Image (tube, rainbow, N blue to C red; front, top):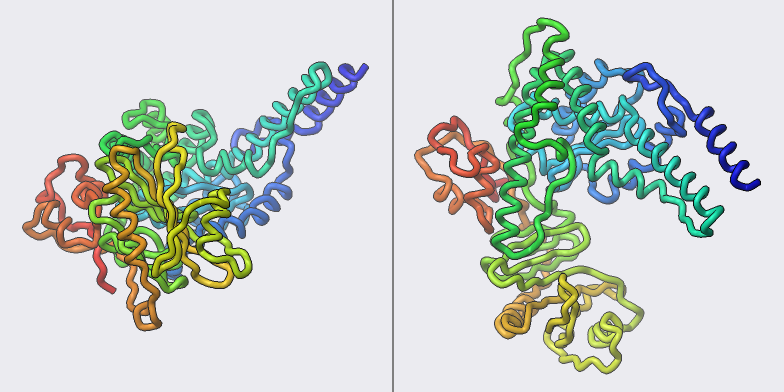
Length: 481
């Protein structure tokens, strides 16, 4: 009897959950109304801003919003109130929340080369919104969960999915091959209607695929898993015939003459944009980390690759795989640095050593492959309720030399006064005229530390072996105000 009732429930929900797709005009299985969709976007927006931060450049924010609103006005859901935000993040990404909230990082904007390419990225995200991809994904997940409930009636085993998890999967990793292609088709149509050449969507794919090739080579060289990009156009190979077909189909809608790609205007907007991590996250210049809010600095080993993640700072030796992670955690009331290490290591018998900066100890940790290896852990008291922690490790063969570097990081800890905090500068992207330079000499003059020549090649659409002499202007990274 239970089985029959559940089947009737599924049937009635499916009938009641049909909604007209604004793009196709056909019925879709959707459990979320447009009002609820807008409410979801409004609810999640503050969380996105809290996580990433909005980039502090009113002019750039208005510029991106103007381009986005122009495209949205030509979309299938022009009645929605769209919101466009540049996020203060070095990640290379763009994504959309339900209901018209669209985000693009300054990280991806650094690699775009014209207003038309910016429009291509925004148009793609508008396509996700107009086709209600997040809502359709939620409906698909719900149907899957109903099946799990049905199975539970006979097996007694089931768990329902989490809405926030469902949404985040679509936001960060895309919506699957067919939905991504539909967003491309719609984006191309919106570009055409606003007189941007849809072909520039293909240019964006080219630069993102260069990033992917570079990351795979770098990961192999550094003996680590590749951090493959998942986001705008991530499902497409470089020469994707299906994508080319939908992009060029948009050009057949009419014979409008396309506007200039406005490369010069775009370059003017991004000239001076912060490069890398933001001041609120702390900046890394020549492998020296300085954090204005925490008023501290640390020197990281020369030649180590540094990634400033939102959760922690990571430095990795690309030659032997040694790694150090630095973060800030809560401190218990009146807890000493030594006691903090024992608590964090869940080892009351941990042998610690007091130092000028706090406490340190040798212990063991599990590596990425699950094997145990030696590690150094250190703690520095920052405030009554905060600790700076450092965990560094390498395999047994390389740990002795690595440990010397870890102790040097500890010893480099410095508290900054007001004048030193005020002097902290974030590296910035600069557009300069081409000179008689090579990428090698440009790299030496830049504020980039690790693999600088290849990063400049990626910025200037010259990866892996393009000629600098063919460029009229160059993108570089400097410490100039």
